[in-house]
Length: 379
Image (cartoon, rainbow, N blue to C red; front, top):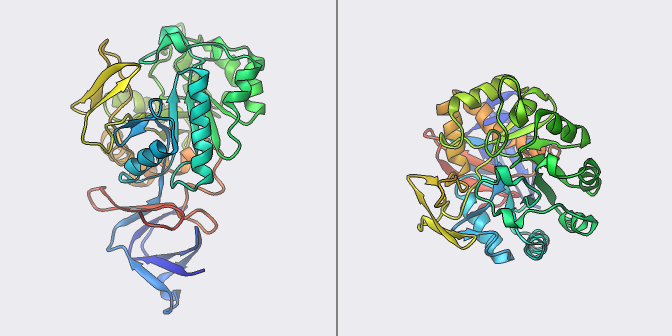
């Protein structure tokens, strides 16, 4: 098995950026971090020309990309197109996201993910089922006619992906605690989202095993003085993770800075909530039979509700630096290390360290993507 080394880069390690290291890749994994002075002369070197080398970005909420919406095309070919589109922007691992739909479509989507992972489609880590166990009062752009409470048969369906991660967003007030626990026992990671829950109902969901919150602040009951709501429970709880959309539209930057101050470091991670326009020339797509068009980078349906985003992960990282005032080191971890931890992949993904998957991205001085590697392979 041939090995090669990345050299001449600012490498993000657990201790911060290092310029004096070579990153040795062997097969699919990172084999070693070696001081440049100790790197053997017989190993192949890839000169990164002074770029920044980061762990590849991991996006837990990708509805579509490359002109494709997962709901409209739950196939392996569609997944390949979506993953390729997002890879251009540094995303080396993603959860294609199915928004609320019928059980038959859910079954098709799960089968497609299973086949894509088995076939080694680069970047596919699992599936995110965003609904259909949601609250009509906080439906956003979801079709409330698809909403329902799962029975035992549907709980089994929703958790039937055996070769990847299953993330399931639900409204905790809509399901009995026993159903939430059953989903978790069967291997799902459960997040609260599109929920009108009270503070007390949210805390009950957390006690039942809810692990995080989907696109914090959006489509959930807000923090108020006498009713902390879902947002208050999310910000108070030290153990849960929160996905955030840093596009300057979904949430005001000041609100995100409040969340950063409230949550322990490592508990906020970046998501895009991306729709088909990402990586595509056409700004329009069809959702539930309605044509939606991204305008000035903002995606809304005819009723004015935000309908996902046109955000890519590299832009989210840049926005985190510019809008939230965080150093690149932390913004990068919010796009890689922290989502890996949320998804239970912390032993294999999200870090540049020996034994980790060689999923990597390089950025230039303008924080534009200059290269990606998935399992040690360039596109």
